[in-house]
Length: 420
Image (cartoon, rainbow, N blue to C red; front, side, top):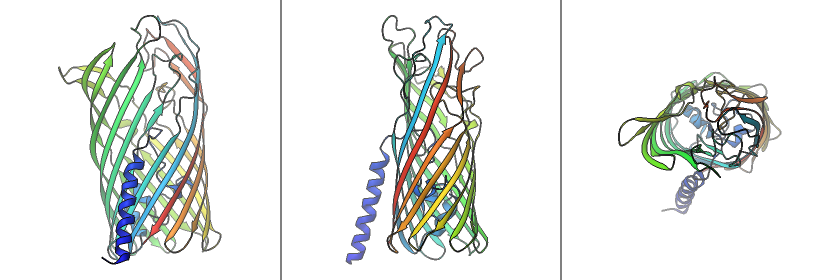
């Protein structure tokens, strides 16, 4: 085997192994948009088009047409640094009154994503992405006021997504892919029947492997204009796990379907150095509804998890400027409409609408190697929790819980791209 082929095989194998190991790290947040350092700097504007490397295949596999002849590999690494504190009062129940704050419930997270693409010829491109599309890690102080409504929450996912793209002609391309997804969930709350002293935890947990698809198309109606449409299906999971209530453990099954997503992106060339990009994204969170934990032994419903989210929307606009042949600057503004409003907002995930402010840059060391850097600051709107008799989580024994949430997020992302 020639030395060049050996080097290619070694580097490709190493990249795939590192992808699997890195993606095993813990991830924060429930839906993780942080799948690309390049598009992080644009607030993910234009993320379904082909101009920013191959990480865009996560949202639109047809964007693989941007891959050059031969093999391209990318490794993206994102640091998520959230802060979220809940201050409120529990009252009116049998457990007494408490105003102990949550402390910072959010956890810092490392979110890796890796991609590889191989252009076989002028028409056919193969690609694969390894990602963590969903994640959640919240842990308030254990004796905080709302501990009977929630303690720690953890969601971990790993998704492998092979895809193939067909470039029909200079104007149109189509692509399809499959998803193989691992999901692990653990939700804890204090046990109100524990008696005096520090209450033990109730817990529901489980894990599963599920399957889904991706699809997309790109259209280039004229020189300098590209429009991309992408689809990621929901993935059905039958979580196999345990329900621990009152110190008793029962084996359960919990059926959950992750949301599917549709996005439309555009990239428009203004001059030889300036481009404007935009994205509209819809996420079908309303399909999550209220899954039930079913006893393996009896088939009876033991408990229900109330989500009942609305659908989510995300809008972003960005631009980039080529300072010279090696260096490009970019910036973007995004606005996200959360699927969670005050009617259903819980202590476990006190989410709200938010603004995304981003900036980034790319540097091409040579025709083979390039580096991307992105930064985002997320500013949520004023957020309140009001668990009263009209709320889906309300329990008369626990009482009413009202609170204010103070939160913000900083995100730093960096990636390397190598074209063989």
